Image (cartoon, rainbow, N blue to C red):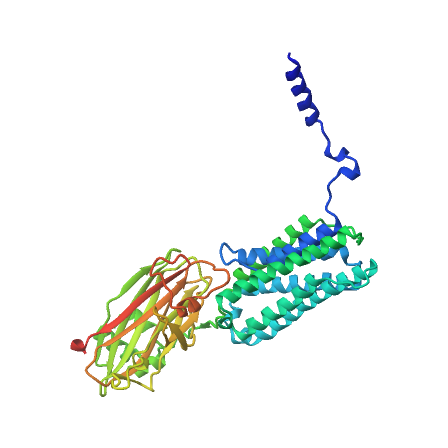
Length: 485
């Protein structure tokens, strides 16, 4: 064997047996307390402040940034009172972030109570952030003063506090107050401030300002893993238990239609399907007494990606009187969908459509039979009902214009079959006009984070007809032409 090959072989064996832990202490590379503080603090502030709205980075990065802030101050909580306060405030921000992520996984942001609390809670969090930056500034000044600096300073920490306060003031004034160039300048200033903060920490390290970190029982890596697990658990629990509307299901009385047999028979004779008549209340059947004609719309069947099949049918029922009509839109899940969180029905009632001032109205509302919704489903041989409110909702059109529609929102029962419902309202026809209405039934096909209900999706004005993987918007038209009226 040549000398070169022998040397290579011996070197390989020595490297294989080499123990890094056997190095003398002065040769082991361990991050100093100042390096630990600088790295965790700067990156924690960056991740907590700047988010990227794709691949859920707006959730992951702030969560990591919050726990890194805790890790930055955790070893220094006995260094001085200000840094101990920083450690406590970092945990407060972590708890607030966890609550925020959990709430975003529920339908609470859709409620009026949440809307009234959002601004006050936001102001409190801004105050906590300012207190954290102020405590950091004072804590660094205390270290510099203890080290003998005659005029202690920490310009990076001071400017970070001022910058954050100015940014929040602009946010409260409204994003329209900040131009694109101004935003770039603000972002550039932000990184310059963080660079200055890091230089300040390096200056303290190079000039002998000592820190005495406390040992931690839980490593930074394990603490980060536990924190992210808590975040994931909070989101999963929120999506599981917080994405359904509270429903007041009531047992349908067995004799609800008692005494209305003659009216039911008349409606069936005129052509109304028995399934539609069977779901009406006794009061509604009484309002249909003396019906003269029934016109049926063309039924449509829609399928969803989660195995559901929805049948939509409609009928126009003419009552005695001057062009008095009752419109009935009925929908029934022939096959129940697997995902049952939120549903919505959005419609513009014919007599509520906005018309130019010079155009006379075509229809008028029948005050005796105002629009109402009813839901039904079967379970164990019994039928349960609920009546969601049909509320006004501002909707955006394809072109960004806003107009008012009516919308009902609800959740399908977790168990049960034959879920169905209908919309019923009366009107007077004032002109020789066809009755044409368009409604959108929106079914949520899978969980969405942050939580988004079918109602919110419908109000956004953005639909991918039949292609959206999270929501299925099924548009159904009730059309009764003038020639048939």
